[in-house]
Length: 426
Image (tube, rainbow, N blue to C red; front, side, top):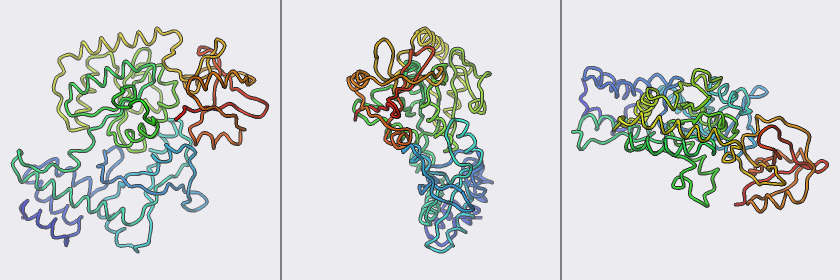
């Protein structure tokens, strides 16, 4: 039987196929009870099943395509941030399948389709997508993955064969320590407290929270920065409140994250309880944020997902009480003004964004030039577009302006056939 030293030599010589190297590794790992190494080998040999976390090196970038009219064709996605996210996929195939593809003609491209359950879940989150979607990549991407698996195997073998003080840590062991904290603006204080306490209890973890000025400094172009952190995170924690569930952007973040086959954890507050969630959030393992036992389970789950140890859980009861108090404060805000973006106008609100989806849509409001003045004074660029031009405007980050009382109703702003749209000034 090969030793770990001999296995390292086989990795370096470049002559042995990656699939054969993995089978040799399994033969070495099993009798030595190297469980983590054996589990990783099993994933690489069998392919990554639905729900299994993907290592970063299996992420592929290419052209987004949909299966339509008997073939794979380029697909247009209006939102540029969503298109960028969907243009990346994870190669779930076994190493043997990838090596078979590698033997094809050099100029041949390949489609890595998204699993049907992933597309169905994203549609439930409100994303309008074709039923069959995939990413077309070149053969160089397949070769890159196989090379990465070989390098990962070498790193793991060296790690097992050296004292812990000088061990070489494999790439997959240092990846996926990022958490994305998704929340409505009105839940910012809840999110900031969670970020502070999770980072204190689990040293080494990195949590992105858009309400933290150190994560999203003034002047940052928020969409690209949020997108970048959304792509690299291992886990998304959704601050699930009656306010956040009305926010379209929160649903977008969850829907986009779903595509990476990564974990979404709904953390429920106030009147929203984990037992009462509806699809698609009910399909995820959820927790109640004011419950000490649930918070303990949450921290242990994050620890498993990131490979980082929990340092201190002694103050969970205090954290639960503080979260409950912040939830009450947010719920008692009658106008929920912290969750709205736009400008005040004649006792009403011109909303660029906010929890208006649940409000009743009534007849259009006639455009008034003072509306444009109010929005421009609040830092927005304003234009009028036709219904046919609306899709193109949205691709440039413009949104339809809604005039609302923020309690019962909302209405579009129109001037004959033109609609009022706005976006934050750069």
